[in-house]
Amino acid sequence: MSSFGFWKSSSTNCSSLSVPLILMAFAHYLVTVPVHTSKHAKLEISLTYLQSDTKAVPQPQDSEVSLVADAFTHFKHLLLPITDRNPYLSEGTRQAAATTAALAKNYGADITVVVIDEKQKEELPEHGTQLSSIRWHFSQGGFKEFKLLERLGEGSKATAIIAEVADDLNLDLVVMSMEAIRSKHVDANLLVEFIPCPVLFLPL
Image (tube, rainbow, N blue to C red):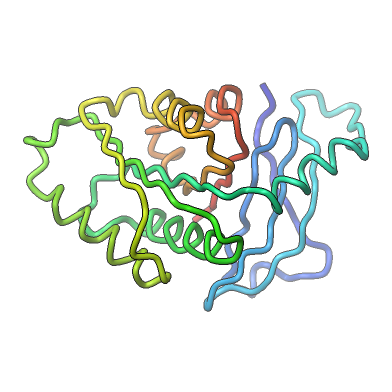
């Protein structure tokens, strides 16, 4: 399985801008996509081939590039998985929620949120507060209606749950923070391998 890489712009000094690079895991490519929010500048689309063998770096074929480009114009249903337990949402989750809302608003897409935790609802005294926080953040992005799923007591299977929900609902795009990867709640390599749609990983 390919490992993750980094995208660097030749024309933008990223260290001087507070701009999150949004990386899209699509087959063997990472793609930076433009996301318009009030805080962030526009990012240009760039393709980087990922592979474990660095001796040869083949260029993407036209058909493969078209496949990636089509993904940005046809997604109508987005998934936001939430794996953190912060009742007011972590920084990474808030960023992912804002990005999801911005993309959905831009493309007229529907949103599904799946809350995943290894504990049962009865063991989460602030679970209600977290749900209220989710609704509040989406309302700030102009969304008062979205589908909310809860998969509690299954946190150890977060990667499988995300892939399963994406498949069952025929989703077009999954948006999540790299925070979930770093905390080891989600296995990025397994997710990209088995999920049936593109995934946007947002670095902190």
